[in-house]
Length: 178
Image 1 (cartoon, rainbow, N blue to C red):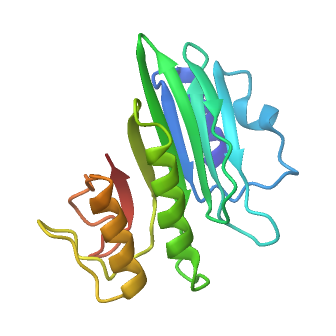
Image 2 (cartoon, rainbow, N blue to C red):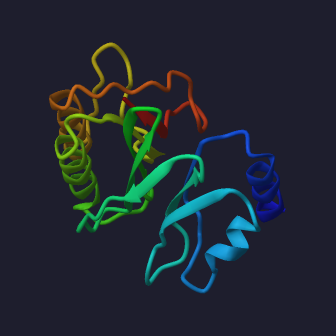
């Protein structure tokens, strides 16, 4: 059912870009089955060695897109997209709820590197952060030190979190950083 819904969205061709977190894709699942003859290119970062996770971005063939090479343990994918005299660096990430101690720091480092390495592009970072202890308000905060450091990185990059309503229970777990 999820693949059929994706195919309907892609074949409808109403979106220039579609970002997906927690894809659960593996290298055994070919791009051709995802695209199903649609007018999109797909960029993927599948999780290796464990079930779940993974991220991908679909970009309309009417736009030029190139995957950004990034050597990071964070589950993040970035694509530089160009069209109509404008450029955008789009990043999509997944941070699992049960994670290794360095996972938040790795994500912070990756977001920072991706942002500063494209100073002339607009930047949009989307993802499932699974950081329920963050309180997103006028001054975001978290009692968790790793998450507080993540917030400091976002502040230092002048990135703002745009999601204002809970996305899971009473928590904002899905982020849109601009």
